[in-house]
Length: 226
Image (cartoon, rainbow, N blue to C red; front, side, top):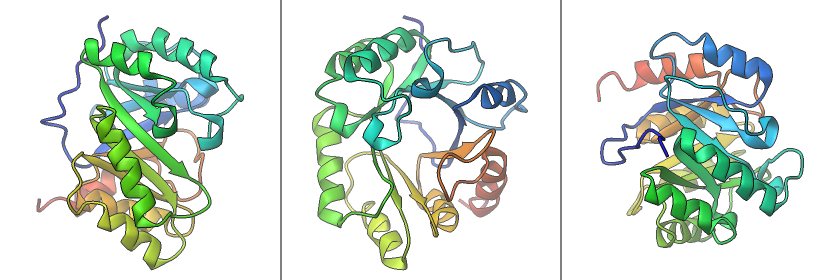
């Protein structure tokens, strides 16, 4: 395998990820200016296995249908697709709910120096803190390098619960809000140290997303003194 090795010791806060979830987004990715994003995310549940070459490191994922995945891919197909994409990947995103079923993918990623993002998505609410801390614990126990949590943020209390996750967290966090407070909270979380921050390249796929270009410009401004 020749995936670009991810160095999690040096993974900087406010890394910007451009989401490639359509042919139009793939075209936009080819036109990105240098430094426009730090990573590209290949959504294999949308686009399959024909990932293009890029000088920008790839995050690959084939999302579970209950966590926003398209085309209702069964576990066996997701495993097959992810294994085929690992040679192109710097990181692979596996949902926490899928870590057991995709343990062979995780093992292959570790063997080849490919980082593991353990992710959790809730499109309806922000769960109670204990539920999200359990997600973090399971991610750590499975050997993940980063834990990504994206939830619907409707009230300030939702945002506060997500902010609390930084207290004593054993892993680097990528935190994102969706919905009414999604856009404002994403900037706040980036400023607090969210290591991966996702933006669209063609159009939003959830409410509350910035474009990758806007996110790059805004996070550069809010972190200028860090």
